[in-house]
Image (cartoon, rainbow, N blue to C red; front, top):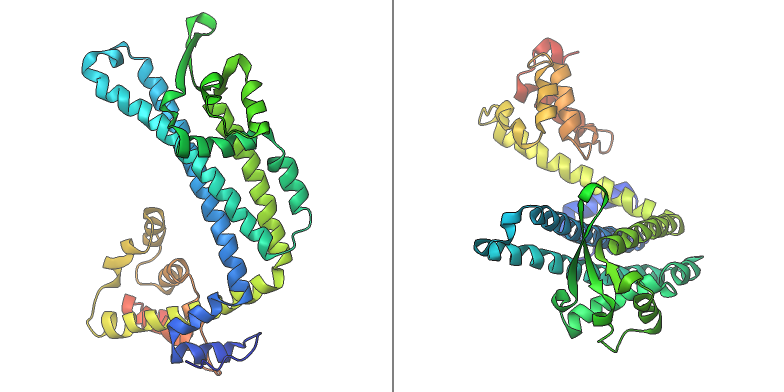
Length: 336
């Protein structure tokens, strides 16, 4: 379908006209714009990092939960063998997911590099990752647990006694068992061989690696935002125009055709849109007042539907008046 948008930049009127021709194709066209593709890469980077971060959190939580279990002597009773196996499996699963998601994040970051010429990217990647033995070990660990053997055969728990007899438990990978695999690259092999006491502490490894990755990802996102500034601003404006129109259209239908015509009480539905704290704030305002309804609109109207205007007509203000009527705001209030 010809949406009549022409070449970039698209003006607001052309976007709105295209929306009425086909809202799905208009959104697809916006997403396919240069800024839309840039935003997609940023979104993928954010999501990939969040997945990696969640995997590391899961691993650390599994280690901590197992550590807590070890403090209970009854944990080792025969009747708790299934619980012991679940606790160990949680640590092994966390190791696998953290290593796998770390490598996926590397691949997604390369996609950003392929899209633009990013100044300083290659130098920073080389310094932080490509030439870093710890990164090469994490990268190899993903291949190790995926293609050679799961971490069950290399995972050990090490218990030492600290000051005042306090037991300290670490979750480690043993270097000699890791080196049974002959496909580690040289930096990873060096990292394993240099591990103190022939063990690599899982929690220390992934805490430190996550911090390095977080700093790099923050730098990379800022760099992409700078390089693609104009494209991204254009895309975000396009999206805001269509989001506002779509929101106005949706809320206008709900208020006019459902709430007003069917005489529904909108107060009964606020808990679907407001958090408990927001509900408490709203209920503290005078009931059915313009002040209260304005605050509800402010909290719910994310895309500024009540500010929408087209060809000199303020359809958004008309929607606001309809919302006042739906909530039973007093005529004196509505008229100001």
